[in-house]
Image 1 (tube, helix red, strand yellow):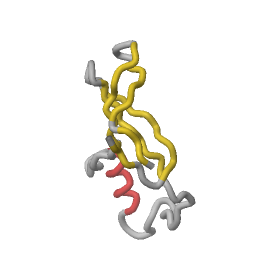
Image 2 (tube, helix red, strand yellow; image 1 turned 180 degrees about the vertical axis):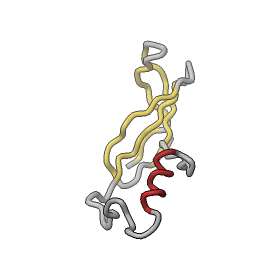
Image 3 (cartoon, rainbow, N blue to C red; image 1 turned 90 degrees about the vertical axis):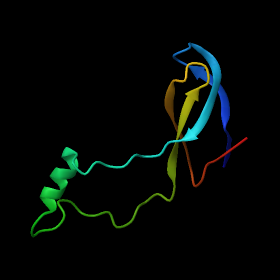
Image 4 (cartoon, helix red, strand yellow; image 1 turned 90 degrees about the horizontal axis):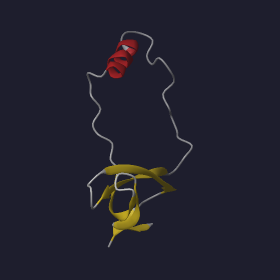
Length: 92
């Protein structure tokens, strides 16, 4: 699906409709020293393998694309959950 790079939508910071720049949200790199990662590594260590079953196959073939909106006036960023689709292309 093709979506415009700029849309006019409501900005809660400015309290009015302004022009917003769209971009796709991308997940950052996981920290290896995070508490959840350390706990998971500890439970996997030694004999016995996984703490819970590894996911062999997924039920869904697509993901919900999350959109990042940046206000052109105040520069405040917020995220908006997109729709479920295979590929989102920003044009314009």
